[in-house]
Length: 317
Image 1 (cartoon, rainbow, N blue to C red):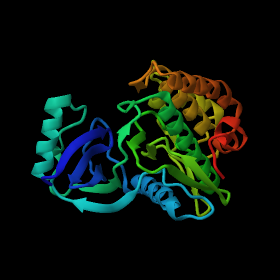
Image 2 (image 1 turned 90 degrees about the horizontal axis):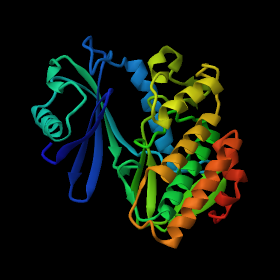
Image 3 (image 1 turned 90 degrees about the vertical axis):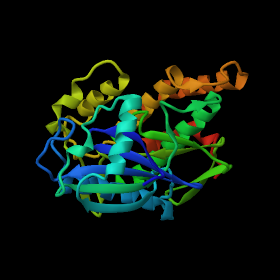
């Protein structure tokens, strides 16, 4: 545990980074099945967390598929169910984070020795879209299209909808790989990376068809999700609800299109760029604006990827 530090949190639990030599893993610890409220919310039941685990495993396994292949969903390295008090070392790391950034969460020292947890060991995907500083919008354009390609592959493979793809759930890392490879409908796609690589995380709200069984989170039971105002993110939840008429079991890939529109909006208006004066940056911003103006005309990301000239121009099939 001496190679760990806390890097994030959510209502669900705590996120730690394990770093040793060149190896990095993210450890997500989620308390389950207990009676105590955690961060103001009831703890997840095992069946609730199981659906998220199945989705994470299946999306991870797409890096092994031949017909539908992508490595853009976070790597799942290990999953464990643990019982006991929270380790003192992790509570120390929690306190360091709290002193530095002020945590919104309850301190995990509250848990007793009979508490159950799910611990997920995930690949390190980099910084999220909110924190990442791009050189120019050319990199952002590559990130956007990598995200779109991954969603298109998952739509076709699993009738997948992410349903919560805000800029905290799109991770970006630098890469030496010149190309990112995909397989869509058995067609190989060799996509120029622009030296950046995407990793998509957090399937708490996601929907997937798994071996004929629909896994989904019935958001009709969570009316508070649709109340918040301010950021475009909160509007997306309402637009999703209206599109699917609050039937969250239904497959409606337009929800993925809505999140891509949100990502484009963030890339144009809010994301940080270091070299804004370059002509290439301004040209790439214009390309992002063109996509933003058109993307809502598509009924799925799969159709967007197949029909859009701006995507085809970047594909080497």
